[in-house]
Amino acid sequence: MIKLSKRLQKIANIIHPNVVVADIGSDHAMLPTYLLQSGKSQQVIAGELNQGPYYAAKKQAASAGLTDKLLVRHGDGLNVIESGEVHTVAISGMGGNLITEILQEGFDKGKLNGVKQLVLQPNVTEYAIRDWLDRHKWFLVEEYILEEDGKVYEILHATVEHPEQLTYEEYRLQLYNSSFLNSSLSATELEPILFKMGPYLIREAAPLLLEKWQQEIEKLNWICSQMTTSEQLEAQHKRKVFVQEKERLEEVLRCLSMDKR
Figure 1 (cartoon, rainbow, N blue to C red):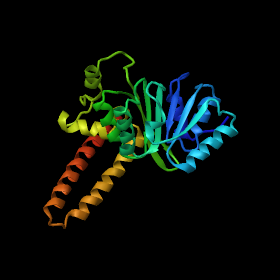
Figure 2: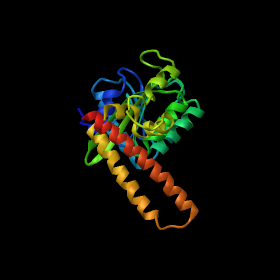
Figure 3: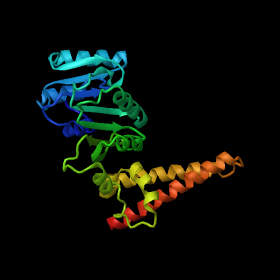
């Protein structure tokens, strides 16, 4: 059986069993091959826009003897699937903004009809995906953070229905309620931070999350220091925004560190 990276293995573990899966931007079709070889899936669609990875995925399907179950398709985003064709969509290894563009285009074209599960692993800009899920009333049910080869990855798991049959309003009240943080920041100030850092990840307060956001604060400090000498009003405004964001992040990290102690 093919061996997956730590990141792809986590994605594979999240995917619902015995459903049709679409892996968008599948590259060499490693994830689809594993899902089929392990028996977790009986049919997987591997979508790839670029010619090189597309042919690599076709070669992978042939060498694994899976051409009848691993359907490799050439196309952009969710255009490789038909409405109602799949249960689960996995998209990994792209920026958060690109993933949301793929989801939005697919939504507009009805490609997400019948899809019950999204497993999304952005390399950056995770908050854009949380925002998209919230605006389209998808239930974010799990978040994971892991490190592999010196890089930190977040994996977001969303479903079209809540496991406990909560309404979206009930779910949202629970998930984005910041009362668990002993912070002086208002709920209005904290909600963007929850979107940015991840509502489940903040509650877990994993050391990897704290380390990631401490590094982000250091980057913001550097950016602000570079902008101190500028007399342009636009630069001054941007610096003020960055300083406010940095202070809110620092406040949340202080609360999480105190909770851990």
